[in-house]
Length: 326
Length: 283
Image (cartoon, rainbow over all chains, first blue to last red; front, side, top):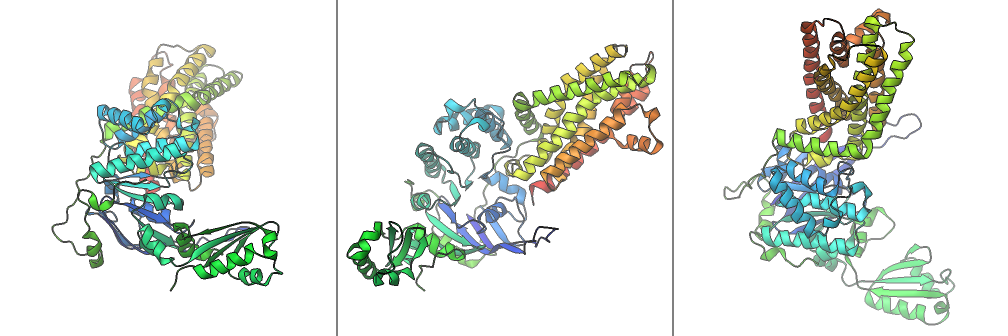
C-alpha cells in the first residue's frame, strides 16, 4: 500500500559564517526501504535527528528526495508530489497555520480545503468534534487552548475529509490520557470501517508498544530494524534490565559492585544494567546483602521493553551500549 | 489500546510482505491504483481561506489597523504645514490613504507569510489539495479587506483637513482592491522568498517605507531618480488615480489607465507570489 525504496536525501554542507561554525553534509535519509500494509499502524521510532521527519516529508510530497521511489496506493509520489495531498492527511508538529482560528473554523476550513463542499465540511466538522470530545471547545481559538487540547484539535483537522492514509507526526504530544484514548479510539474506528492505514512518528516508546502493528527503527537516516514490537523485543530476549539507585554514591569498595560498574550506564545515583538472568540474580544478591545494601536506595528488575530495543538499536549515538546479540 | 489487528481488516493484504522483495519495478497489472480524493477547486478554496484569514482579524489585526490609520492621519497633519493646497494636497491625501493599504497588505502580509514559512505552518496548506493561488489570493484578499475602513477614514479626514471635495471618494472601491492586490502580492512574495523571518519583516518594512516616501511626498519635490523609483512602485498608480479624482473635472481616461496599470501589476505580483508559495512549500 505504501512502498518506499532506496529513499535518499542529503542536506548540503553549510559554510560557516563569521563566528558560527558550518555544518557538514548530512545524509538525512539513507537508502530507506519500507513497506506499509493496508490497514496497519506502522511506527517510525528513533532518536532526535534520526531522519524521521525528513522521511515523512518525502512521503507527503513536502520534500523531493535525491533518489529513490515512494509509491502510495499505486501512485508515484516522487514524480507527482501533488497527488500526496489527495491520498493522505498529514498532521505535522506545527499548528501555526491554524493558531488564530477557532477549533470549529480550523476543522471546517481544513475540510473545505480537502475538497468538501460547505455542507459536508460542516457535517464532518460536527461529527469529528463530537467524536473527539472537542464540542465544548469548538468556539475557542487554538492559541488559547492547552498544548494537549491544541494537539487534539489539530488531529481533528487531519480526520476531516477522510483519507485512506493518515501520517501523524507525534500526534499525542502533551495529551492527557483521555485525549490519547480519543485519538486511538478514532484511529481504530477508521481502521475497522475503512481499513485506514496509519504512519505514526513517535518518541513515546510505551505508546508505540501498545498501538503499533509494526515499527521501523531509524538511526542516522537508516532503517536499522523493522518488525512487530514483540518481534523486536525478541531480539533482546534472554536479558533483563536491572536498575540500581544508590542513596548517595555507589559503594565501590565492595568488589561485586566495583565489578558491575563497567557494565552499568550511570546517570547520577542511578545505574542501569543489562544482564543475563543468572548474572542479574547474582548481582541482586550481592547488592541486597552485606555492605552494599546500606548504600542501596532502590532497585528494579524488569524484562526488556521496547524502550530497551529503542535504546539498544537507536541509541548507538548515545552512551547506552547495545543490547542486541549479534 | 489498538483493538483491531491488521490481518482481519478488509483488504489487508498479507501478500504485500512477500511482494516487498521484488522491488519497485514490478508493476503487476492487478495492483489497484487508489482513486484520488477530491481536489479543492479555486474559488471555494479561496473563499474558505479568505473567511479563515478574516476571522483572525478579530484577534490581532484591528489594533494594527488603528495604528495604520493614525499613522496616515498623523502624516497628513504634519504635511499640512508643508504643502499649500492644490495638487500637492491631493497627492498627500491620496498617498496617505493608499499608505494604509501598503501598511497592512505589504508589511503585515510579508510578516505573516515569513513567519508561516519559517515555523513550518505552510506544511498545513501544502499537504492539502488546494491550488497555491487560492492560499495566496485568499490571504491577500483578506488583508486587503482589513484596509478598507482605515483607507476610508484616512481619505475622509484628509479631504476635510485639506478642504478637498468628498464627491469622488467612491473611487476607493476600485483603488483599494487593485492597489491592495498589487501590494499584497508583493508582500506575500517577499515573505515567502525571504530566507529568514527577520528578513521578511525587514523587507516588509522597507516596502512600507518606500510606499511612504514615494507615495505621500508630492512628486514635484523629489529628485529625478527617486521619481523613476516612484514609477516602479505598484501603489503609485493607485495614488495617482485617486489624486486625479479630487480635481474639479477629473480626467477619467487617465484614472482608468492608472487603475489598469495597477490591475496589471496586481496580476503580475500575485502570479509571482503564487510561484513563491510553490517554491516555499516544496523544498
